[in-house]
Image 1 (cartoon, chains in turn cyan, yellow):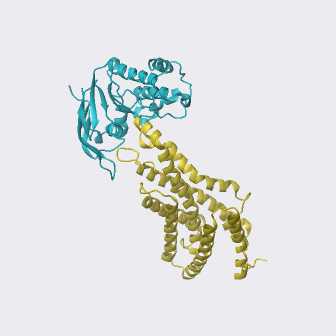
Image 2: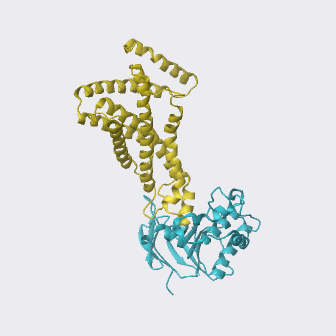
Image 3: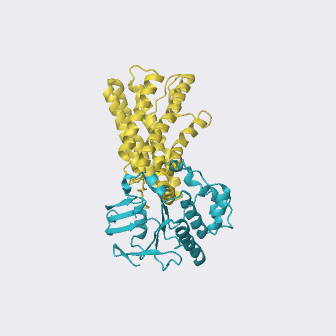
Length: 222
Length: 261
């Protein structure tokens, strides 16, 4: 099977600092569920940010569908690889306006935005049935914002979903909901997911590949 | 009636009473402005006297290169003042800002002196230098405000910018609000000045002409040209500088380069 993502011998260092990691390799096939674990500050988030070019590599290359990500227009790359940050960011607008934000960008001009009914159905799938589309996102809890952020990232139908510590700021109940959503996306929609975490989460319903990032390198754990 | 009353040295020193009042206020209320007021006063005296002698010399010699050199010194000085105010180390903004200032101010001053007022020759220092000075002074403040706002907002809203970029926005779409707010912040003082002119205050140039005995109806025409020129040059230079510097805040992958301080 052709790989979706090929991380080849990459290195990264912040200016004037020692390398975060060096000579790191990873191949991701379509439909895989990748879990990257490791202690705080080991570079897990940086790895995801490099894949979507929110940081720039200092060595090596990353191929997405066989093309070097440096040769893909940043907006095009990020509409195919959606990154959801650890702390969900919302605009001070309604839930609906936040969900439809990707469709206001030129790269998604040819995609038709989902209607109200479709979004209401999705809210239920994301355990947000008590949230109305007209709700201000400023009134949502962090857990609800995180689910809205994942839902928004998915609306532009990315080929790869990058989740950066999606449950670190959540209580156990909200965290379980997010885990359940991640696994269902992989099982039911065959979404390729890479998620990083420093806790003991182990998927129950999906076959995952777990890697550990420590001492500047990545090792397969299971 | 039309004769200008000269201000003697003694009378000039008498005006220092205003500074004494300001110094006393700062001292009594611990405003911490005594040093700045003292330096500001010294600079006002020395810079304006120097300018007076330079202008006297330039008006006498009437040389285009000398006129343009004075204009150049004014733009370089404005750039240093902006650099002192905008404490940004990460993004190189000085050279593009300087070049934009130079080109846009020169174009504005040429347009006003050569076409609107129709002076021959176009570089006639009596018109060209005051017109250039007003454009530079006004637009310099606008640029400093806009640049400060742009860098501050880019840093404060880095997470929001990255959220938009992650959802497929290009750098322009992601930073549209920040760009707009930065340009607007710089332009508001010029627009407010247009609202208040003639009602709240009589501008310096018009006052000067009236004091020098010019018919107020001629003075207002000059002032109208100046007000329009200031708004136009501020808009052009702010928009161009913000467009260039905004791009410099993003890397080759359209990633946000500014890191929190």
